[in-house]
Length: 148
Image (cartoon, rainbow, N blue to C red; front, side, top):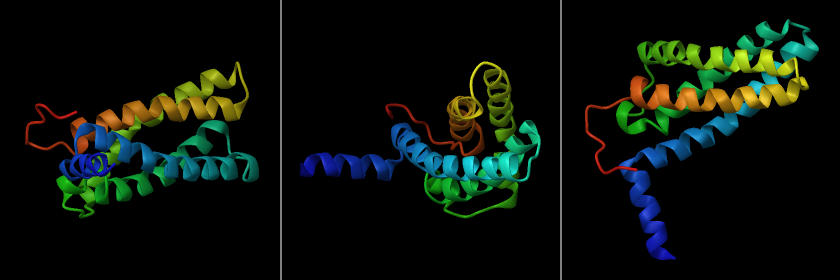
């Protein structure tokens, strides 16, 4: 069992794409709770329109996501330092993700219930957001040949 733990620790230390993906997904779980909570409050409590509720929830979640990913997932690339410019770049790159999420939400809510459509929108946006973060926002100049 010890060699497996050493391999996991080494993978985490080197921050391979797989480790980043796992970390990003773990932080994403936290942000799903934030997003769903904010969306539920906006849509069901404040009675905001569907699209506005989704955008408000995204703005709240993207701020937490940036902070956690800067410190944890991409801490090697950022030195764990929060930076307004990188936050703005992270948020701007997330516009594609929120566009995908909102499109999926609106389309699927016509054919299924809103909670199911919201879940599908979160999954679709995850793929877009990880790719944008890994390849654009937090990219490094160091090659990742042989990294998985």
